[in-house]
Image (cartoon, rainbow, N blue to C red; front, top):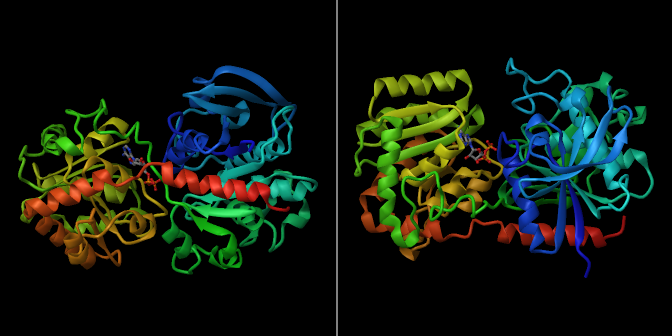
Length: 484
Ligand code: ADP
């Protein structure tokens, strides 16, 4: 059996550049799939953060003009990843967030920037680089979603395509006037092409033409077929329902390993779970919380956006504090939410503390120190923070949506008596339901044996990429073998 070759097209990848879960997935799949005899190379934009880490880069293909300037595709490695990089200074030589300018707004030419990424992805898929001809082009999110679209309109033989939705909320919707600039034919501007609300929909187009559509949990795969979660694409997704599959994300359990993690005050494992309390103290100190081993400590690591449901938590904070609980929040995002948490911290010094910003190391210490990690999302394609929580013995309290529903076993009476609970779920995502979940969490915390068991169950759950990698490998292999 020969290995299956996959070109993964992604706009971010851990550890080179990351704004969210997409980067973690794109970064983890190559190593996880290597064990399944799948060889993945990733195509990335040549942001400074990528260019500066590229080792032994070789020019593999030149574009005299790629949407407004010359470009090269470089083949090289960085951080152990096999990469192709689109070196196009007019599009990607910009420091910082890959999508936003210094004013915090989308770059005005994002339509061109990510059409260029997809254009190159399609070209490489068709063998534009001698000696490289992947069986599958795997596009991630709207930024890469035009790859299957170009492959369709180019005509002729093409590799099979997969499009993964990491978050349906981000769709890449642009004015219809860009169609010509991104090199799509006028006939693409139709309901069964890229046309979307009178403009061009990148994700919409990808969903139309990808051979298979995946998303990052089975529950989210079902949810996006409904108008409640479908974000106006549910009709198209329902039409393609037989090609939609949910594969839950794993985590990199070498990076996220409490036994070796250098960001912790003290390392521990399931066998030495009592050591966690020293991380709890370190975390309380770092956040300026009262150092109290017995206080139930809740944690949040999150983008602060409506999706994440943290406004629900804000309403419950006085009650959490009144019951003797503490909150440590690490996050950044929308100003009203930051202001809300800042005010809560000011009102409850020693009990509520926030650090606004993005800090990878601190996110590790937080998972190692808190008793519960809160993820009250209104929707959540997969969610990674609850998986890190499980691995680190931080019991997740989650809304029963998307991947949160698929990865946490609610500590209801049946699960507790069977000894299989790993966290607390609540539904719907509302303040009363969260309030009840918090009440259950306090009760669980007060029951030493049940709490310990729940924590250990979480730490022993397999949240690695091993299971998901097998699913992706099966998908790739079936697709590579299928007729066009
Ligand atoms: P999303 O991709 O919607 O933001 P996920 O839960 O899938 O949500 O992934 C979020 C990732 O970003 C996790 O790895 C989480 O630890 C990390 N993260 C979010 N906010 C911060 C922050 N302020 N500091 C450090 N890491 C963060």
